[in-house]
Image (cartoon, rainbow, N blue to C red; front, side, top):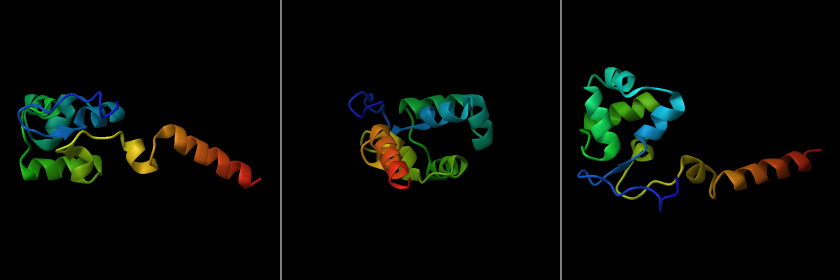
Length: 105
């Protein structure tokens, strides 16, 4: 999802990538809620930006996903993680890998 495609945050004023992280790991809202000791509806509210997490919940989510809090929540639209890690997205990372592979021959 491009940052321009990302919906405006809900009432919380925060953008987050909880739904993306759940989908990547094939985790249901209920499973994440159980791990966080919250109601599954809380996860939905967080994902839609209708609810701001407590500091404890934000830190727990970061620990659960093994990511820094700022990789999950932001006041500005979030870039795809691949773009943040590799600079300009998957295409550039793929090109870099291919170039390095050819140079090592």
